[in-house]
Length: 215
Image 1 (cartoon, rainbow, N blue to C red):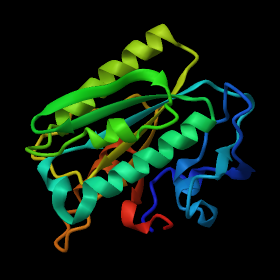
Image 2 (image 1 turned 60 degrees about the vertical axis):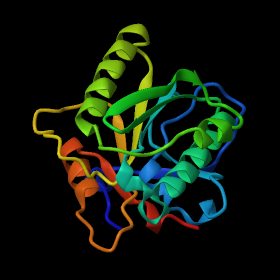
Image 3 (image 1 turned 90 degrees about the vertical axis):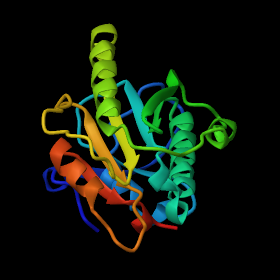
C-alpha cells in the first residue's frame, strides 16, 4: 500500500459508525478505507483525534473520461461512490458530486444530504472523451471558497477518484490546506503511468489504489 504523506502524522481510534448525530468527528479515510472490517461495506470508522464534533461536507470528484472505460475502472469507481454515499447517509452528512470527462465538468449533486440510494444517479453517468482535470480542480477550489464564506464552521473532505491521465498543466493549482484530500487511484491497466499518485503528491493528499481496497 502506498500511503499519503500525511498518514504518519495522524493518530486515530476505532469506532463503529452510527447515524444518531448530525455532526461527526473527522474520519481518517486513509485508515478507514483499507480496514479489513470494511470488506463488504463501510461499517468501521477510524477517527482523527480532535476536541469537538464538526459539520462535514464530502466532495466527490469522479473521473468519467474515456480512459476509465478500460478494465472496468468506471464500474469500480461507481461502486466506491455508492459505498461512500451509503456511509454518508448513515452519518447524516452532506455530499457534493462532480463528474469530469469528455472535456466538461458536471455538478451532478451540488450540495445535498447524502441520498439513501444513489444507484439511479450513478447508472445515468456515462464516460468518454478527455480528462478536464485542471477545470475540475479549479471548480472545486472555487466551490470550496464559496462554501467557506457561506458555512465558515464547515469542514470539507475531498475524494478524487481518477487514474489521473490528463495532459493538463497543474503546476499553479493549490487547494485550501485545511481540506482533507484523498486521491483514489482507479488505474488498472497493465502499463501504469502513476498519474494519480503524482496528483496526490502535488495536492499533498492521501493516496490509495482502488484495487488494494478490501473486497
